[in-house]
Image (cartoon, rainbow, N blue to C red; front, top):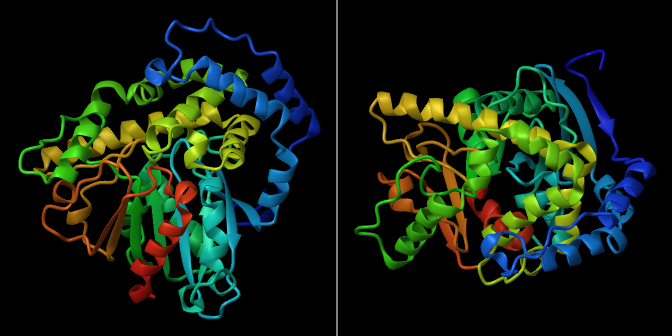
Length: 408
């Protein structure tokens, strides 16, 4: 780009040779020997992954998914040396307000694909036109088409500053923000870096503690909160191996993710098995299989399996430094998400109103996250899980509308 502040239209156009190469690699996978226990206890079962890889190679239609994504207006711009790709769907409603949505790991803007229409044009989806938003969905640096990573790297604070600049470039003087997983960390920092323009923040995909911290105390919790705490503490024992690897040796992992589509498939599918609604026995019972594979295809075609591992590394290093600073200052800061670090002591952050939505068996506990009761909006839902925008887009859409309605 000749002008770093220029915003350029963008279309996804993956060369046919790359699509053919993906299919060939999938068909020629050198499969490991099936262990004597072929279930999810040791990771993704061989029998399951073989069937999914076969569908990805010979049943899944990338071109149809690519065409559907290209129906959403897309753009790129450069901010602080980093290419940023984003969806930008303006509402037909004259009084619509701006809303930026931020994904986490192992997601992408594709997570929000089914929210964009209802949020930007509620009238056409059976909703109230007064709830309309101009919707902006950027790809985090290192994810999807926000690649390659800039030499300086980006932590959550830097991404928040980039989002503030993006919204300024798009002409939005006031805007609301939602984030999930690592995106909740970005959104939580927006009021710190852009306090005059953020009207409210809405968070999902939160956890009750840090992946490198102590187990959550369970004494005095309600039965439902105790169950969430027990789930999180089990994750400390056996659920954060992926995070330890990405936050310590991202380059070692990068070779496998960049060269083997089945490796990339297993790496992401495992999280959709573990983090979605526990009532779903398989990932595709919780989310649409084609949408899941479109998300994974985006990682593959852009080579962002490797760069997201480095993004997680950078994010975790910055987050550990932030937590250490908070502890040295005597703060009771908490915070994490399953992706790459957490969201901070939300209850103590001075700024615009904060809303939280907790879906299914997610581990966020209000009494731990918000002991002083400063979060204005906290809703818990029995359905859904960590990927709420894909699992229960109707519930998340309604929660966003409800929270932001009085803040418009």
